[in-house]
Image 1: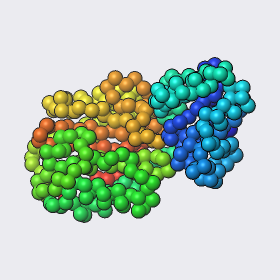
Image 2: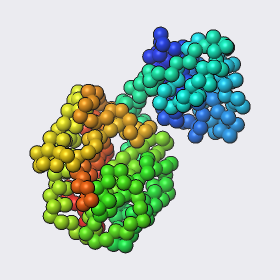
Image 3: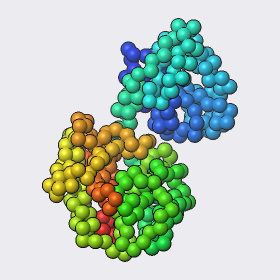
Image 4: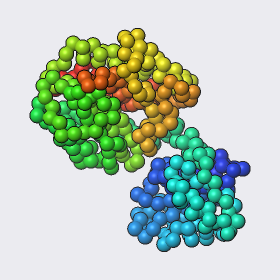
Length: 359
């Protein structure tokens, strides 16, 4: 049993004698060389990867020194392990188990005298462990960010009037994958003109035109680890009001970055950013959190939000991404991804942002 699996079981002591991990993020975290599909069963002494015949060969080649079992009936395989290890309580990930599966598992294992626990305790244990990244994890996140930035810089030369939002998104994804990304971190947010006032607007077939603002919010995935960045650009030119609001967002973002360091509350970082925007009279136009953790999921702990009392710790990877949105007019957001350090933070995002980039 590896160190991560052992830590999970140590923290479950007194609650359950086994853990059934169904999330892909949990599986990848426990076994970094993880098959594309499968489940993990942890006991006090052993770790098992359970997969069907489609993924058994892949799992066997990727994961060494671990019990890899091929099942035809998942419940029956788990029953055999319950009997082997005399398991009495199995903890499930509440966030990743449907109500139907919970009741099905509970009924299936009841005859063996085994209870199924579906609370958020296992989720929190894994989340709390994942929040501090190892050097290996940090390297993968940085590499994912480099892939995103490479694609972004290549596409900059092709942004012009007449190009559609969707064409930009497809080109960025192609370049990411061509250069080694295993996927995209989320559905890209690439919006232009009035559509930039939509914080999570989807790419459309709208054609860019001169004078449009353009928000590009992208991220790559590498070996399960995500990156995240946003830049706001202008096509040819921007109005004085757009430039002024861009400067406000930039000041807020830089203040937030300066506030990030080990020992600071996440909520206090959010307040720093929010206060800058409030001082310029746009507090009602900043309508989302300041940032979030990034890792095996694009949004994970900690949340950089006003009510979050989580203390930032060295080794966390977070975003700082303030935005101002004027409905039916335009929006501006700037997002960097940071590694929290003892003295402050290290910025993984190298794309310039000091001025509104004109394409």
